[in-house]
Image (cartoon, rainbow, N blue to C red; front, side):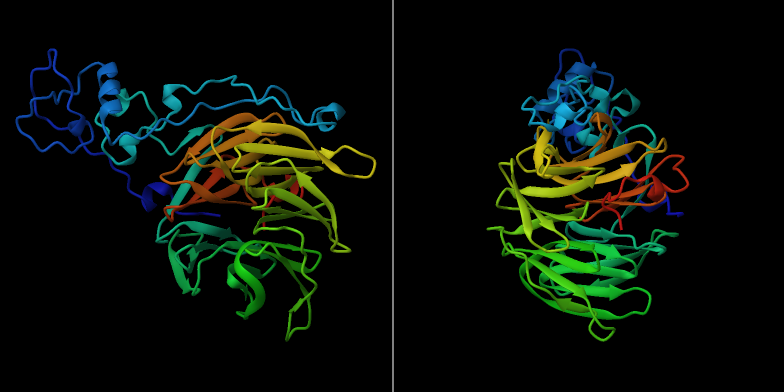
Length: 440
């Protein structure tokens, strides 16, 4: 898929430093000048870019324009799934900090606003990502509020995105241009796709679009915002604000969505769904995960372990991976003969975790994408949780999606949709991906 490069999509430019010269001996650097906002000439503080780096560091700390540094990264003590003992009980220790974050791996806050005056001499990162083997292809701008859903239907040359601004945008994958804006009349809570169908979660309804024949349906039934959608076994599942999971089965051509009995059990809103090994997994604001049998549609287990909202779920191989605002990622594995799941490993972050997604690198290794509240997306190789890189954003990334061909997407709260890819991606990422891995 040829998508317009990021350089042609967004023209990032750095403001040049001021050329005002002043004696620098024993004078403090002007913090407003560092931020590109000093309007005094002459200024009693220094405007000299040749001052030592520690002076800039002290001045930046005093400036109100300087945001907090991002926290150090963490690495694992050991693999979560290397032996049978790893799933026999929860490991309470956090991942150890093997590789402390170096200054070059911290994003320059002045560069974000185009006001860094130190150029190559800046000790902080002037890039939207840090890592190897992957790159940014494009930044797609247009949404007025946060991106809340991304879908790339199989075989389509169109990328679909939904937003809190109540619109869906259809992007041309060859040019990177927005071909169409659809006013949905309500805040988009989520997207998913299956075959020719694109499903959109809205307040009190689900919209279904068939991109092959142009048919569209408004599927009623949910109470409140639809936060999560999943398709499996010819059934559509929708997690709603009232804690109910609505189920529709395939029907006739005239009525393709026939409501089945809803799944009840959660006491608060259902915000995450995933499917794997003939099970539907649901995560809720009530801090629990429920496991549902896809054949009987009955709850077979309730998983208790998180202490805050279960934001995202992912099936990887025979494991279930969950994340929460409690700053943890938990790996659940089968620990009993009856097939019940228990926590086998807990990975700790310094910030709440908003979303997970899975992809495969060029060497065929599984990589976990982890979006955190500190405006970063961490890339961890599984099963070791070795950090492979980090993506930075102006606002927190709330939506992640992967696609065949080495592509993956991030959508942030500022409304920016960013396209990424693994360099020298394998011919068929979909064939190598342990199923399911959260892609359409």
